[in-house]
Length: 230
Image (cartoon, rainbow, N blue to C red):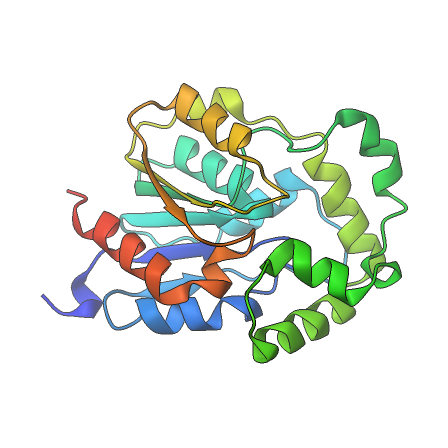
């Protein structure tokens, strides 16, 4: 069976919404199966419901696996809970319920990543990974993201709760998590596994952006998971 005949993978990117940072992951996955990254529109702020509808309109007509990274985890959960065509759900560095205190929600509208030192942002997202190309790409992607879009997405994260929808997911689930993730903590992974005890968990020596900093390792786990789906 060639790569084109394997079950396709739909990837929903993190907070930036562009998918640009996932190039290395896609390059590692593409020899084994069709891969589509659904980039979100960044010209206007959209909430979780609107972005979920946007993603659903672009999913394959045949069976597929959906991967939600970070911000997009709740979208992937909703897609998997809604669509019978979803053969598997992959949750990478993500959550079913908001990872930060709800009391911070009113402050999200003030968020502007351009105010934060680049080194601080890179340390939080990339951890100890020393890749100047990835650092440069992250800086360029964040610089292009409109303040109102990032603020709207941060506000949406602080209000989201997809635990009941996660409980409704019936397909196999794989969770990918970085041991040094300081944005989505281990307790949020444990919340997912408590609701779905049969889901598989793979840990990596990485910070939050593990798909970007460990593309070959995570691609291997993703492909193995997909190959075992019936």
